[in-house]
Image (cartoon, rainbow, N blue to C red; front, top):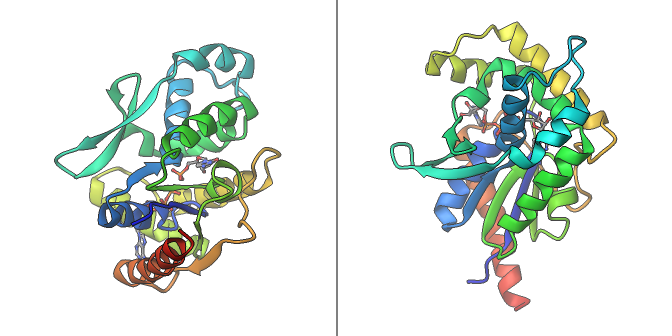
Length: 235
Ligand SMILES: Nc1ncnc2c1ncn2[C@@H]1O[C@H](COP(=O)(O)OP(=O)(O)OP(=O)(O)O)[C@@H](O)[C@H]1O
Ligand SMILES: Nc1ccn([C@@H]2O[C@H](COP(=O)(O)O)[C@@H](O)[C@H]2O)c(=O)n1
């Protein structure tokens, strides 16, 4: 069967990686969580005190550090999911913290950061057979992706899902702080100058506010099967 590129974009915490991970496992495709890459750069910047007192990023310093920031993914046999590594250290847990969530959108708005990460993402998908989730996958990273999905859900639903998840993991967080963070990130991500979050013209939109995880997965598998059939016919 011909391999394709599947781009899953959308707002914060709407279920993109849940959908993308399961789909990649089913298809035997590579899965890449591009948000984890921006989060890893953010963690590096926090650890190296590259945020100024006014909250802005010390961009000239960060630019000098960029060649020292190496991000990779390794399959965790215990979870069967890829963990994110920053300079060979697993940072999978730390990059999901509220502290990183509160700083990441500023890092992701910096053009030289995006240029570096987009180049890595394009390299990972050059042989196709990949499911990648993020904000600009269908618009910038793989504008020719065979299947593009754009996921939405209300901010309140998304915040509640993230709150439940952090509770389950024993990571302390307040629902109101999560809701505020989700709304702030949506705003910064959609209004930045470089690669703002937006639906690609040819993306299929899914509002999963009232869908269960199995229901959204079934919807996605149907879309993938339709696309795989079409791609096979086209040779
Ligand atoms: N349809 C759904 N119903 C209920 N919970 C869901 C649904 N889809 C995903 N979730 C849960 O919502 C939370 C956020 O999902 P996920 O991490 O996949 O979102 P995301 O869009 O990848 O987030 P981020 O933008 O932070 O990377 C997870 O706890 C996940 O299990
Ligand atoms: N392609 C992408 C992916 C992510 N971002 C930025 O990273 C933040 C964290 O992403 P999550 O998917 O883990 O929520 C996100 O809020 C964006 O600022 C991006 O710009 N492009």
